[in-house]
Amino acid sequence: MNGGSGIYDVVVVGGGPAGLAAAVAVAETGANAALIARRLPYADNRTTALLGGSVDLLRRLDVWSRCADEAAALRTMRLVDDTGRLIRAPEVRFSSDEIGLDQFGYNIENRALMSALEQRAAEFSNLTRIDDEADTIVPGQADVAAHTRQGKLLHGRLVVGADGRQSLCRAAAGIEVRRRELGQAALTFNVAHSRPHRDISTEFHTPQGPCVFVPLPGDRSSVVWVASPAETERLSALTDPQLSEAAERQSHSILGRIRIEPGRHLFPLAIERPRRFAQHRIALVGEAAHVLPPIGAQGLNMGLRDAGDIADAVKDAIAANEDPGAPLLLDRYNSTRRPDVASRMFAIDLANRSLLSDFLPMQTLRAAGLHLVGSFGPLRRIAMREGLAPSWRAVR
Ligand SMILES: Cc1cc2nc3c(=O)[nH]c(=O)nc-3n(C[C@H](O)[C@H](O)[C@H](O)COP(=O)(O)OP(=O)(O)OC[C@H]3O[C@@H](n4cnc5c(N)ncnc54)[C@H](O)[C@@H]3O)c2cc1C
Image (cartoon, rainbow, N blue to C red; front, side, top):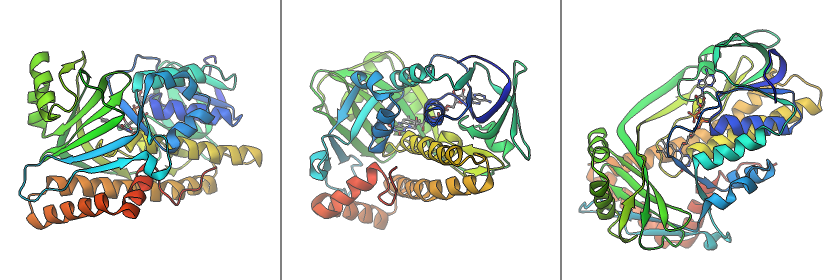
């Protein structure tokens, strides 16, 4: 890859995990592509539970083999009602072998995933890397002009906006976004523990949100602790021994003694949904296209499906010698992404609201629903399959 102004089939803006995956998937189609993204160290210690088709996509893109050693298999998902309320749900366990899988997926530190994606992106001669930020994006009749801060001008017949929550590409496409603050925040940190996790991810449901311990390689786990902003601030300000003790208490010591590793990050939580996923030669992927609370590990899994779907559309256009930014192609992308994103958002929002609700009938409904899922095999298997990926989705 080398830096340069010019005309491209596809210009990807943003080099987070969704943008890098989109750039690699698009380059794989043979399209003449550019990626506008700063080469910076990954800024936080988040991990991603990659579910279902995400690992298949990363394998197809020749990315997975570069980071698989740093990932931990997720074989059992355990939901524990820790609300202490009068009406509580029974513990629910989902096991991958029940649906004939060795594992539901893998948990990996985003840094390791990013490094594998960066390595793979660097291998394509048809992917030009611009180590910069887009400054203005201007859609036109035949292409979209992208000016960078350092004065480069790129024209893309299609621009893939992977520039995160404050997406410049989304604004340039004139796509409105509906945003709802959740009044919750997530504190993330990683821990070492004295007992093995046995490939089990455990989610404790508290009245302020879930606190989940997700396996990492060895006797380590990543923790995402969702609570009120005040509570997460309080937890974040604790000393290492105090936070270790708090995490051990919250986990009911199922992992034995817990020792916090360096690095904690706070994320205010919101739900964001744009009115469209593509318009005016600009298609959105990743958090430019959807923001969800980290419940059920859906965010980047959807972002990778965005990346795969836009690359499929580009592949078809290139093969037919058609314009990859044509309205018909964008309409198709829009209608592929809409049901996937809408159904995930609905399910996660509902799960979160039912957990936070003080309304007794809602708590009863939640407990009864989980009881039904936990005790009725066919329903549990449907929940597991749908949790991995929407069943109606055609796999290419
Ligand atoms: C606590 C937490 C836990 C999570 N756990 C999971 C999980 O287990 N599984 C899962 O699937 N998802 C999970 N998610 C969601 C997942 O982390 C996000 O979906 C994912 O990180 C979004 O990636 P992205 O590339 O879309 O956005 P980002 O990572 O925000 O990347 C956007 C990039 O665009 C760049 N950018 C912005 N503007 C410009 C510009 N003008 N020009 C060039 N570049 C620009 C930014 O610098 C950034 O690098 C979690 C989220 C949180 C908060």
